[in-house]
Structures are given as C-alpha cells and as structure tokens.
Image 1 (cartoon, rainbow, N blue to C red):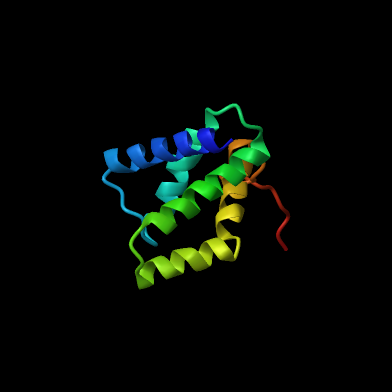
Image 2: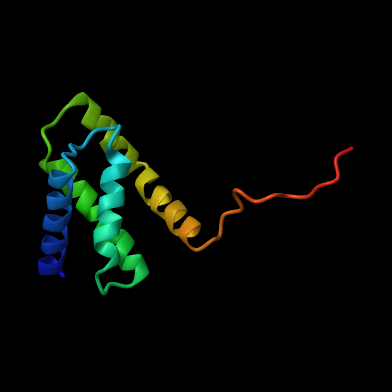
Length: 108
C-alpha cells in the first residue's frame, strides 16, 4: 500500500504543479478534487479511496511551508470537514442529493 500511496501522492503533486496550484484555504477543495480524481482510477475500494485522499491531503499539508493560513486548513482536516466534504461529493455523484429538482408542496 505504501508504494501505491507514494505513486498516487506523486500524481496529485504533478497535477497541482500542472495547474500551478499551491495549497491554501482558498485552494483546499481544488487539491481535494485533484486527489479524488487521481485516486478514483486506483483499484482501491471506496472506503479505502477516501482514506487515501485524506492521507494525501494531510501529507501535502505537512510538506507545505507552515503559515497561519495553513493552520486553518489543518483545523478543517482535524475537525472532519475534509471527510464530510468527500462524503458529500460522493453522494452527489451517486445522485443521492435532492438539488436542482422541482419539489412539489402545498403551501398554505
């Protein structure tokens, strides 16, 4: 798994470099998107993919120069916001969210 993780991590770093993307509060979810897209094509089961995405983002945070802004990113990760966001994206991709649909209700 370590070799696979390292390979996936490097692919995400290349993707970030290609996009000229540096980790910050503003770009956190673009980094998550890149990680999810790279990990999607691995042969890992769904729950493992999520864990790997989180590990990749954590490693990118650890490898990035420490700043006050990065502290906010760390807090978001520590408080589970990253995992919840991944769950939301996965639910949306499976059509499990009721958005952009007309809802019929009787209003009084």
